[in-house]
Image (tube, rainbow, N blue to C red; front, top):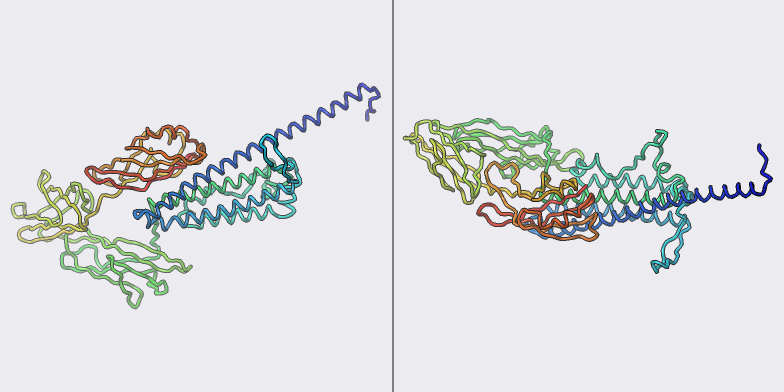
Length: 513
C-alpha cells in the first residue's frame, strides 16, 4: 500500500479532490430529486385535469336523468357511473393517506416560504429508509397491492359489458416490470425498496393517475351507453320451436318456448307476440295463431329465467314463418319488411292471373304506380300497421305490414361515434355529421346545432362552445388547444330530416390520446 503523502501541498490537493467528488455526487442527487419532483407535480396536475373532465360527465349524466327522452337509459347507467366514482374516490383517498404517512416517516415539518408568503411542507426528499420502513417493514406495500387489485375487480364487475370492454386494457396493473437482470421481483421490492421518499411519492401519484384514467374510461363508457345501450344475447339455454315455417292462409302455427330441458326450477317468464304465456306441466309455453297475409312474418318471443348461480337471464328471438299465396298473387317489399313514415317505400306486387284480373287497394296509407308492371310506391303518415289487399281473379289476399318512424341518427366526427380517438385526427376534422346506420333509404339528417364541452388536458376549467350546422369552424379555437388527455363532449345535439321537425339526439363524448 502506498504511504500517505508527506508534502503538505499534495495533502491539500487530495483533500480538495475528495471534497470535489462529494460535491459532484451531491449535485447528481439533487438533479435526480428535482426530476422526480417535476414528474410528481406533472402527475398531480394531470389528475386534477382528469377530475375536471369527469365532473363534466357527471353533470351531463345528471342532466340526462332529468331529460324525459334519456331518463329511462340514464336510470340504468348513471348509478353504475356513480359506483365507479365511489370506488375511485375511496382508492384515491387511501393513497393520499399513504402519502402523508410517508412524509411523516421522512421527518415532515412545516416551514415558512418567504416567496409564497405561506407555510409549506418540508421533509427529507432523499431519505432512503422511510419508504422501506413504511411499505416493507409495516406491510403497507402488500396492503396497497391488494387494494389496487380489489379496486380493479370492483370496477370490472360493475357491469358485464364493462368487464368485456376493459378487462384486457384496464389502466391499473400491479404486476411490476422485469428487473435489469430479467427477474420478476414482488410489488413492494420493485417500487418501494430503498427508494428515495420523493420517488416513492411519485410512484403513488402514478397509481392515482392510473385510477383517475380508469374512472374516466368507465364513466365515459356509461355515458355513451345512454345513447346506445347494447344487449348481448346468448341463446345456449333457451329453446324455441314451431310446428311449421310455411303455411297457407287458414292453417295454424304452434310455437313452443322453454328453457333448457323445460325445467320449472328456472322459473321462466315467457312472452310470445307481446302477450305473457302460461306454462304447461313441463314448464313450456304454447301459443297458437292463425296465418293470414301472404309473405314472410315473424313473431317475437322473450324468455326470462333464473340461472343456476341465481342471476336472471333474458333471451329474445324472432320466430319466422312464410304464408303462401293462393292464385299466385304476392306483395314484395323492395327495401325491408316495414313501411317507414314520410318516405317513398318501393314495393313489387306480383299477380299470377294477369293485371287485367287483379285489383290492388291499401288501408293505412296511399299506393301509387312507380313505373313498370307491379311497381308501386307506398306512403304512410303514422299508425302501427298498414295493409295491402290484392284481389286476383276474384280471390282477395290481405298483407299486413308494420309502420315505423325513421330512426334517429348518431353524431359522428370523422369515423368515430365517440370514445377514444387520436388527438391529431380529431382536431383536423372540419365537420360533424348525423349518420343513419344500417338504414337503406336515401334519407339524410342534417345537424342544426349542438353544445360542445372541452375539459381535461390543456383546459384547467371546462370550456363551453357551440356549433351551428355541421361545421366545426365555430370551435376551431378550442380544437387547436386539444392534446392527448383532453375530453370533448357534444350535448344538446339537434338534427332535422328533409321537411321534418327538429329533434334532439344523444351526443357522444371523445377522449383524445
